[in-house]
Length: 141
Picture 1 (tube, rainbow, N blue to C red):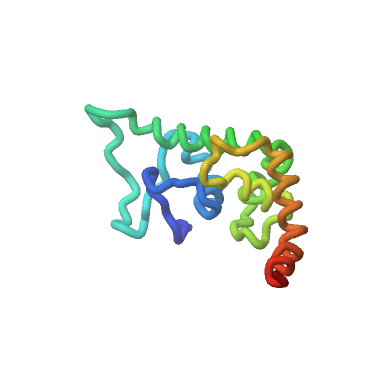
Picture 2 (cartoon, rainbow, N blue to C red):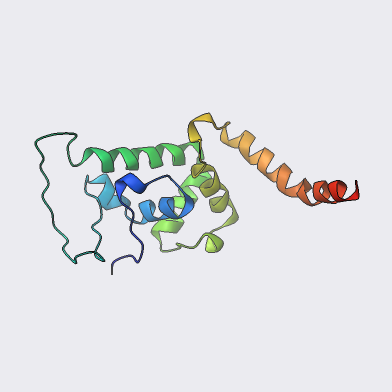
């Protein structure tokens, strides 16, 4: 059964939905093939070789390696995210709290400038805990 969403390799910006989609199709992407878009033509095959540019398998392998590298930085929580998505949980709200935290970290916009995971997690929890108090203090002034 094909997914209702599909992303081209050029459209990947590592957002939450895209990370979940990549994890659900990880076996195909790791093998060097990009999952076909069944909505456009219904055609699932394609020409694989080109006489210019990178090889057809370089972009999918690079994207899967990047996602794996990001997940590896989150250690156990990244593994939990990986296996929950592989078991069929594809909605962010249905994931465990630890898997949500790992997904939030993995899908950061400017990932290369991020702090270490444990520092980011501490700051994120601190902000979430004190955010309502900060808003009340601002409104009182």
